[in-house]
Image (cartoon, rainbow, N blue to C red; front, top):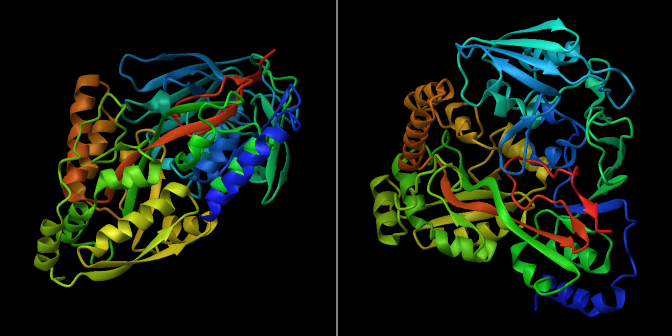
Length: 493
């Protein structure tokens, strides 16, 4: 019996005795999350863990994305778009304040976007906003943005965590003392343990139901299971599928099984031999038994993918048959590439259940074709430094959870180092296209190029399986954008 099974069995034995003993106050919630954010400034980091805590909670943008993935008004109550699609005029909400009591106005919007576009910007997705040629303060509650080309998803991009509005007085301290305009204000961060938010009483929008929210960092499934059953936390937005059976049929809990934007990939360093050889990447693609990975890593909850696009998106095309599982074909391609006996490589794994489980399965599958993998487990901060920043890796496993992030492949400096001028030109055209039919056609072309080039190993769409106290309502079942939005969560009367 393994450690997780023993721990879950112990938790089950204790659950009846502990039920109802540790109960959250009716206006507070404690949420278990897998990863601690490296910073609390969403404009200065790419980690999903940042947005899980701060997006739409502490910080807000001109627009916001709802549970269905649709654009809604945010700090901008309305906007108009010029006939040529190049000028956006935003009317801002009046009476908005930052959590330090300072007034929000058009100058803060201009400051935020000038900061994003500055030469020394550390924004993880500055490229989304580079088409902005000017930001002009018309009056304290009106901002005009001019673009140098049309951007089909501009309003959506304004609703991302990368584009939240910050104040010049506090922006430099947001990494550790975040100050935004959202319904929750930062209270404290106990490094390695938790982040605590409290409701911001002068909030300009609809009042929230909670007075306090605590994000507790719990990286392993067994500990998370025990915490849920003991009532130490009230829920989690994404529980390990391997242990969901513990909560099925238990009236004390609600299971929310939904989808995410997370394309789970076998990330491949395309700039490094032997992975710069297309035949090697094709061989690895043929060596992958996708369904076995889904069954083993997500207990069947994952959805197979063949390229870098979410299956629930209207632009999706099924390319899972591009390189079907074929051990003989994989061996033949390796021989053609000059590796008849295979090769050795490292696989760096962040501390995520789907990554470690997928890594073990893929190592076994690759061994069948002669590719010997050394599995290296790293903390997430180290993964960000080694893999994402320094590109010091052979292979990795990660879910890319940002919406419509296929554009990352047009950046040759991105961590997997894919440099295809044809693809870059296609994405530039796609980004500048507003006609929906044409956008879909271009998106399908882009997906097909990535599948054919086997840029990464495309595994599955990450499911979202939340487990919550049955008395809680208002949680998002699906995750169309990074974040764990608190505004609608409440305890039943």
